[in-house]
Length: 327
Image (spheres, rainbow, N blue to C red):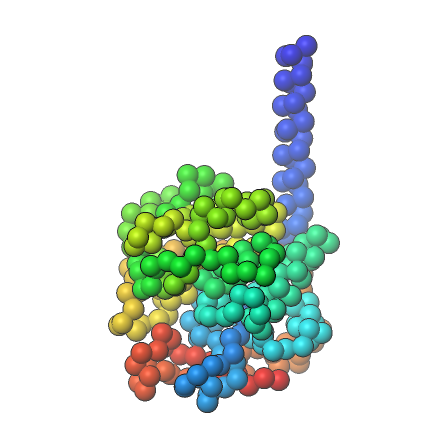
């Protein structure tokens, strides 16, 4: 009897596995080879940004996406909800970039919530809409799931650090790194391949103690700050195409300020390119498209010119910035 029970349980487990993978295959069907990714803007506060445009996007995020074969549209943080919704229904994914923003009340927080809820609803209805959070975006995605009006981050000594990629043992079973070449993974884990520029982090202990967070997200990689505090470096949603990382893959190839210890090694560049390639590949599973070529053309980042920052503002973290006025 016990033997028959074990056989039955094994049969049920295999059946569930086949069904889950069948659903994933059905959902993850390529629908476009012309993906368009939205990048959330920041509001321009303080000198010199406030005098150059109401919103801005670091050009490195744009190049990061373009290098993998996609185009970019800005998503204005001060855009009305109905216009944001119309745009999200026309594009194939979103990047929530790094920067600074209030965790309890800010335009960045409010717009991130709208995008997150849209992505979840889209997937629940059988669609596909990936999100990638970087640095602040990574932290914000955790805060949205946690659901309380509080800053859940820990202060960490992690400003301007170059570190290896500290992957979890089962990284090859994750969505984001299941196609990561073994040779690249090995090199990334033993060399300085990631760049960290943040004063706050998501404590690994906090993530694991929060039922909401551990049920929604899977920790893919961790790291430690100068003082030994462990924090989440990479995570992904278990059931949705939502991915995030604390480090800055976009800076590796496209930022050159000598005051920042950004690694430009072959391994770091290959890892950065892998991440951008992965996300753009995810975006190709989205069915969304603009109603017309005219509307698509109107939204593209090509309508704006980036400003070269370093000749005048030598302490700028960005080589180029897109300054954008509100609509």
